[in-house]
Image (cartoon, rainbow, N blue to C red; front, side):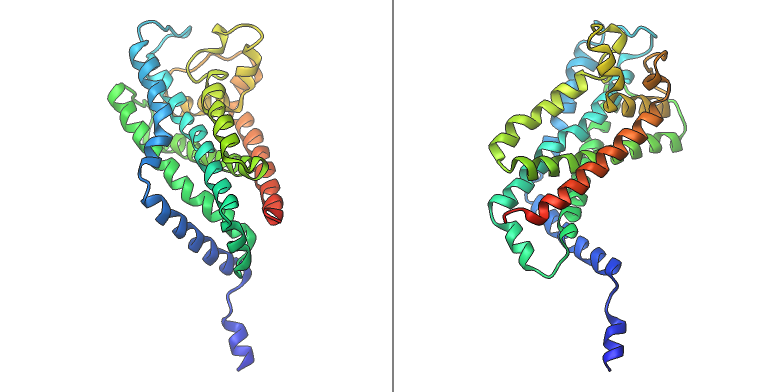
Length: 273
């Protein structure tokens, strides 16, 4: 009888999957009561696309030519990932302040399951925000000129970038722990990083001191890869990051994800202690 009971117990991987699913479901139920969260994630990219891609489209010229509406769309789409940082950080910080972390700690579940469930639920919100931005981009004139697989690969890359940025938000929450501080700092991620990249302007048109920052910005590498996959106008090469964006994406996002997730897991174990 004892051996039969032991045989029916799920393994560590199956148990972790069950716990992650439960935490994700809890988070999604909370998000269902706040549908404006999707609009909040999509708002900044939509404003950027409308202000630059529509109102100023006749005032901005690309050095290599091409449609500016198609050029700016990748920047707006990637900005969705940056817009996810703040809401995720605030949500985790509220769990810390409200005692939810202590409740989870008292339950017989693994610590990684809580953060994994949280980020997976927020990933769905980010993907919904990306869908809203894509629909508006199509209305404003964005069109891919490659095959369906390349188009899907570009959106899959943005999905990966969204998930990495969610872990950056988790790290912000576990480091700062104060909602007011997080609300002040995280908007700079949404505003500053895109403008220090090739999201809206060709780095060759930027001041000489800013140009290397924009070229080596991981956001620029993600955007460059998406533009290639979608066949949209892109910045000209000549530097290592512009000629090898896939290498920059793989190394930078891999290191950022490893650092944010490992440090977050370690700090979550001692959170509230």
